[in-house]
Image (tube, rainbow over all chains, first blue to last red; front, side):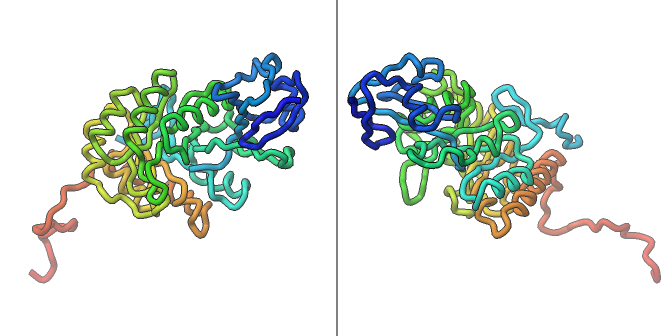
Length: 67
Length: 266
């Protein structure tokens, strides 16, 4: 198992999980989101080839109403 | 000159807009009201905020960008809530990824939670990094003509001085500074923040602003959709008055509009 910090919350996932699988597990597939891993943007085209490691810090964001 | 949208477009980052009113999308009671207010405002550019997705929330809920599709509106992601250049730059990189490479953004770096005054040194730092990274930056700033000029020199495509504090509705507190900024700018100048009601927007446009960006003035009105329509007219009226060129002010010796001769009974 690996422990990730997702939007500041600790969550456990199987070792050998990539970002596309993570998005699927969170029911966010097809949603307009953007992901940052340890401070770097992970482009959509690389979600399936980006493997997560223990201790990774992820930010997953959406657009919301704002001024 | 007739203020015709074809003759008098607002050009931002190489794209032409007929509306000079930009609106926010926050503080509405629901998405239906957001959409109705945006429609009534006639705005073509709408601001959005970038926030963490709510983990575990029902993912079948409609999202803002389904209500305001990027195919129809120019989506302007902002950095509201950022208090450092680093956070603002990170937020806008996420926004660019979210919006498929769209690079027109609104930068604001705040300095104080009580007043929401901008932190200009961090704003300048962030603007420089973003321009270097290929962003087209519309930048919220204090009404300081020197800072506005520095932001233009860095390469920001629009400078957006405050009329008064964010969410205050206090109107245009320093028209003289705004006039100096407008007179010296080679890029569009929009008033961003502080507009409270339609006359404030009209005054901004009469001063020669290229447009107005507002959020709370519409969303916090008793009837937001009606206020959105009022703001549309105010911006159009103020722009037309600016282009028409107002009459000079005279304290007295005013001349009546009717003939002074041929009065009866003389």
